[in-house]
View 1 (cartoon, rainbow, N blue to C red):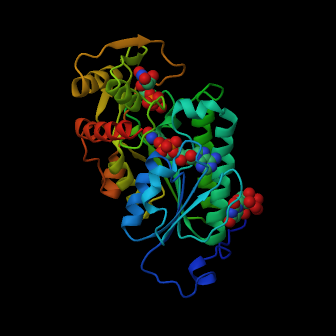
View 2: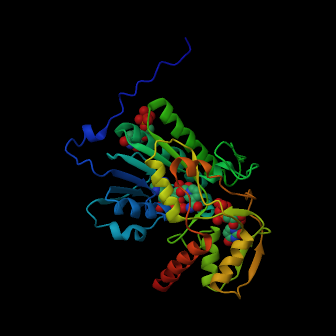
View 3: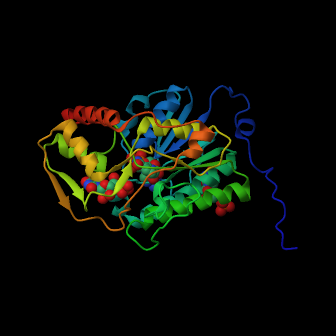
Length: 337
Ligand code: NAD
Ligand code: UDP
Ligand code: UDP
């Protein structure tokens, strides 16, 4: 018949048995790709504070060692400078796969490399997960919905994405990463989790990385005009990083595959964000209008019903509170440099 043979998953190594028969069972060994980046380093903080053993692999393309400085000499922590487009071996229980530039400026800088990172990088980490029987979580993105025609976006929506545009290396790259992840689950029995992350902000974002919150905060602190692209009526929904990390950890340790949206459903126009930042930092700042960026999604707001009901998760930090924590850290950093 044309029915495929039932798949035998006995090959999945359980590395605790094969590689470390005497290892204590009271903590996990966790691999975080992209762990020196913005979200990754906050995730590493949480995982370390919970007593896990953590390996970070990061090429330092956009990440910084200073983000994980406080763990560098910790006996349960290991940093490896490595590019995920090349194979990598380690024995771990869980993999959080975040390695990929996330800001449009960074992912467009070398678009082909962005595609490779999403395709080859995700393939390698899934191969690793398969070899050692680790659970794998993909950090996907709301960009898989493209310029959405359904609002707010729920996980059932398949998206409206341009395969040939300037953002495609990222959007389509992440879509293939999701496909690979689901196929490793179906074909090889790897335990997988997918989260679609919506715009996230907070301390340790790279100043001037082109993303709107970091741009506005940096410009405001430097007394420069805030740059509004297009008419400013496009919307985004901004999630504070600690809320997001909490959702990722819940997802990893849940029994759900997803994909689940993770984000803060409070929706703001970009113009109103500019007004809030201006009011919080310096009410005299100018706001200048600049050309809209190509393929810029006009509306974005997560439907988080699934994460709410199945992970018992929802964001706690409101935009102004999160912004004030971020502004404080940006101020400290600019004093240091
Ligand atoms: P970031 O740029 O700060 O972090 C990405 C990290 O990956 C960096 O440390 C970078 O050096 C590393 N990296 C990039 N390419 C690599 C490669 N080939 N090999 C090894 N390391 C590599 O960005 P972030 O905001 O922390 O994003 C982390 C993840 O979350 C990304 O996968 C991104 O797509 C996803 N995400 C972020 C947001 C957001 O709003 N910040 C939204 C949706 C999805
Ligand atoms: N891989 C890796 N680390 C591992 C196991 C595999 O980087 O511990 C890579 C491997 O080099 C390959 C990819 O993951 O490029 C997919 O591996 P898989 O075993 O699924 O496929 P195959 O090697 O059979 O093509
Ligand atoms: N944006 C802006 N000024 C800036 C940077 C961005 O008006 O200095 C706009 C951008 O055009 C988009 C929104 O803010 O409509 C969010 O952009 P960002 O790059 O932060 O994230 P993404 O487009 O990936 O959601």
